[in-house]
Amino acid sequence: MSPEALSELIFNIANTLVSEGKAGTLTADLIPPQAKFVVMRPKDRAHGDWASNAAMQLAKKAGMKPRDLAELFAAELTNADGIKSVEVAGPGFINITLDSASAAAVVDTVLEAGSDYGKNDHLSGKTLNLEFVSANPTGPIHIGGTRWAAVGDSMARVLEANGAKVVREYYFNDHGEQINRFAKSLVAAAHGEETPIDGYKGAYIDEIAKRVIDEANADGVDVLSLPRVDGGADQDGNPLGEGDSEQREEFRKRAVPMMFDEIQRSMKNFRVNFDVWFHENSLYSDGEVDQAIADLRARGDIYEKDGATWFESTKHGDDKDRVIIKSDGNYAYFAADIAYYRNKRHRETNPADVAIYMLGADHHGYIGRMMAMCEAFGDKPGENMQILIGQLVNVMKDGKAVRMSKRAGNVVTIDDLTDAIGVDASRYSLARTDYNSPVDIDLNLLSSHSNENPVYYVQYAHARSCNVDRNAAAAGITYEGADVSLLDTTADGEVLAALAQWPALLREAGDLRAPHRVAHYLEDLAATYHKWYNVERVVPMELTDPEARGEQADAIRIAKAPEPARAAARLKLNDAVKTVIAEGLDLLGVTAPDKM
Image 1 (cartoon, rainbow, N blue to C red):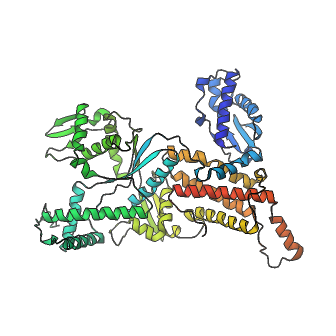
Image 2 (cartoon, rainbow, N blue to C red; image 1 turned 180 degrees about the vertical axis):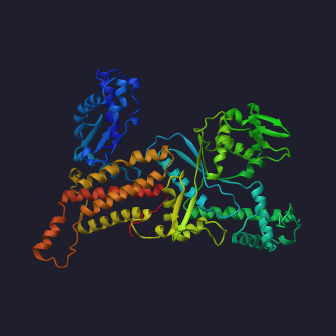
Image 3 (cartoon, one colour; image 1 turned 120 degrees about the vertical axis):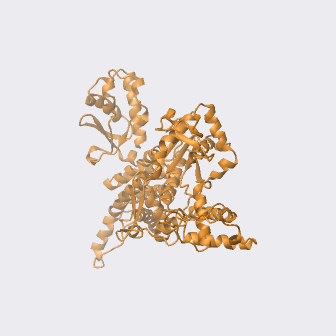
């Protein structure tokens, strides 16, 4: 019996007690939804397999003492199939012990469902637009964007496992000043000049500049001979780069697609596949910025002041109103944000019921204006628009921060990280920590084959379970004759309980937008499995003591060899663990090796 089944049983008992007039002043309308009846694993195994605080939840509404109400629940639970015993403890906890067959039923449930075990459809009917990474196309993906790639793709997989339709989206900021600075930097590099004071540095700038020149030459264009305007210098003599010119536009036109291609390649190599690659520039070229402003104007949220056009965001909870068209006629950056949200909600293909934005720590100040804009369009902030803010990543090696990248200057890029520790370790280590918290990536640890390395520890559990299968096949052990009720040892029980908790954990990870909970669960399951492996056998252990002979050797083998029905049951338990670990790793975009 699973925790969900027990929760449903407790919910039904509450209704039965009300209908029979045994629950004091409690009425059916005061009983919370089933999901509110939490069934948990006691820390002290002497308290049973599962525990519930349902009586304490309902006692005040019933006008009863929690223990008295708990006794009524216990009496009903004791008569239920699959429950061995029920005790009331403390102020009113209900401690439940299952019979071995009921506890072990999860094994067959896992094996029958396979990789679908734990998946559900409670988010079905909703389209979630999940925008993540969205780094400017002015350089390689840095470590912060790499974290969002790992967290975002894992979150998408978890949401899909909960039945949602997820649109993975990357927003290319290919309009505005950052692109101008990028083009200036390339032109300066092409002429062997210093980087403009507001420009981009790194060997990749020289690489892209050379590629632009080579591509242009192949097309019969001498890009360096195109008209160029010197941008002058600042008051300290630092070069500002060049002004608007045909040469800069040619570099921009050719270089930005090159960076697009590099970013797309990096994402694909990182096992992240986007459904939509959205270009900011299209919002202007297709007239969507003007249309979005017109919509807000019609709603009474736009006004003119000091020659500029303003969004009256204070009407919707922002701390100040926001300029969207500056007095010089140029659009403020927020104008594109308004149009982009409107586009997500009303596009012809897969309009978003929920638009989820995954933003860096430096965007915390944007939340107020974004939520105000959401409300101004008639939507619900926090429901139709959700904003997740990620924290910083520190890369460490030999106890020191790693900062230098040969290509990109004073940053660590996605390719730097994967070259150092591989895609599996990179994705797992970045996704296993709550994005709300800073994370340290220890390159030494994550490249080691030790139990301290979390990704290795989990993957090794899967590889070990595969090895058990190989050994069982060699010994002629199959599922035939399996009796899961024989999975009655303490170690068996811990693994069974861990497996039973997966469906609730998966649902919680989706609802809370918390893929890191999947990683933590996998580490707990792996730890439980490794302990089980060390004390329980599917296949008899090989003789390890070369001095043991005769009766002594036979005694060792007899002590380690389970009877056939138990061995077959343990093989099924082993394979259930293998199934769930493989599924969990896949949700994190990490491979499940069969050998290590």
